[in-house]
Image (cartoon, rainbow, N blue to C red; front, top):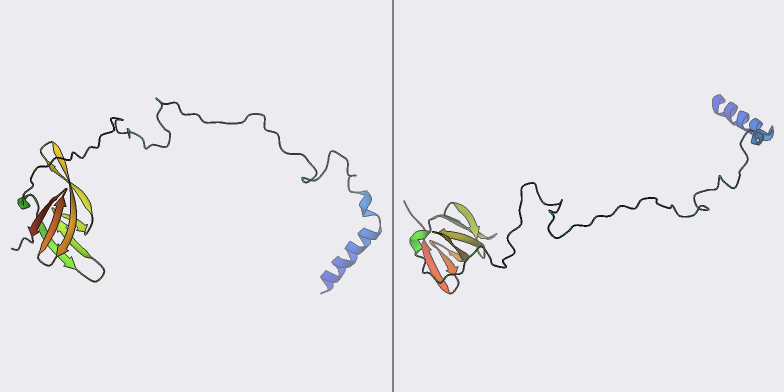
Length: 149
C-alpha cells in the first residue's frame, strides 16, 4: 500500500513540475497513422501462368490428363459375368449397408471400375441385400451371390 501511494505521489510531482518539457515537440512529420496518406508500393508483385507452363500448385511429378476430351473409362456394352466379382462379406445395419466386393468395402450407390483386359468398365453398386449384391453396368444388372465357405 505504501509503495503504490509513493508511486502515485511521484507521478503527480513529475506532472506538475513540467515534465512535459522533456518530451519532443510534435511536428508535421510525426503525424499519427490516421492522418497519413495511403502506403504507396514501389514494386507490385503479380503472377501470370502461360498456357504451356506447369501450375506451381500441382503436386511434384503430377501431370494433367491429356486434353483429348475422352474419359479413361470406356463405355462398352460387353456382358460381364457374376464370376468377375467376389462378394466375401455383407453387413446390413440401420446405419447403412456395406459389402466387401473384390477385397474393397463398398456401399450402395458407390461407383467403381472393373478392368477387363485393356478396358475399364464402370460398375455401380445398385443394392446390397441379405445374401447377394446387385451391381449395374449401364443397362445390365448383375446379381452376385455371397461366397460362402
